[in-house]
Length: 520
Image (cartoon, rainbow, N blue to C red):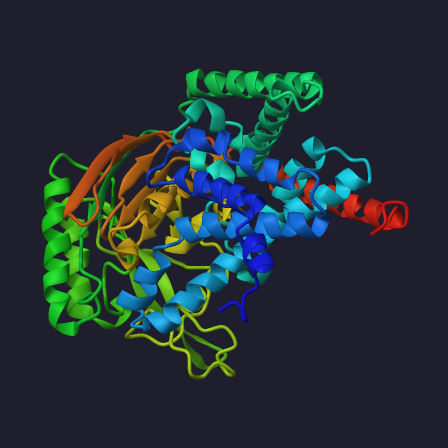
């Protein structure tokens, strides 16, 4: 063993800085559901910042990488449930695939910390560089290689409503900036108190205090603001069928699946509703090709005198070829099909295989249907009184799609999903936490129907008024006021995040110009 790993290398592997980075990663992971100890995010980066003291840019990269690997290994542990139980991959394949994604996401932490140290060597304070770089790299990972904007620091605060109302100004990135900046100020204050001979961060603390007070003032004002009622409330029923993933696509179980949804719908609609929502792929067959089953669903819409929205695979001809789509159909109270919305952002390796011509040995996770194709445009569905923007499963983590639907006229966002893939894990709650921000950013209520949970109603302020447990048959009813469809974020989108990208690039350019002076 000594021939393979020398003592100095072993010591370097488990040095103080590495353990501090691991501590930060653990605190970050614990701030997300579950357990969702959101307050930890406000101190989680302090060990990381201590580890970065007097480090070289290369060491700062390793420290950030260690922190990111630890954080995302804890946050995304559920990927192994998806890969092994439902993807039927052996652990020997699942673990490397999981670690590869964890490493990819950790790289963005590493880039943030390394450019921060580079900036410090060039005379730029970390209180500026780290928040800006953190947002810049969070934003880049939201679209690079299809994008995966899961578990950004700001998402951990989804329950702290007064704090997160600024999402209608700058999206989740505004909350992330506050968290990172607060961590920096607390770290510097800790250094000053410990007798390290550094001054108290008075100016930075004043800036943070002003930002926090301003944020909370804006938040409480937003929460207490009287809603402008521009249309009548929409009475809704959300149905959670709790269909096991193992039998969901089995033809033998098809009749039982529809029976479950019909029974729950009749119970939920007894008091009278305007809109009934079933989850993603609630109808586990091609609705277009099954006239007998389709007529049963149409009759249910007539019986309840409500619009019925449900997920089903669809197909259409494109350039003479049959194309499969993950879609949502809407049936009118008269039993007519009045619209279809197709999923625009598909899950790589879940609904299609990237570079499928090359990776011919790789199978996607969704069985029973060939590779899906994305929808061609955002289609808003109309109930007659309110327009809906439907986001299917994974799509709800992308803020630009919610903006697209609301700008097209949607005044209620509908998220339909099948989180059975995640098993009994933290993932459904993490998924819900992210979706809360879509409501605030667009000032549009979001209703969420999930096959196995969490089914929920979220108002335009991000308040979750009702939600189900996991893996139970259930329904939730309520009345929602369609949103105003007006917010600064709808207008400017991610321009503040783009500004952070430009500022980060500017820091990198300045470092390159000064590279000889700082001995790089």
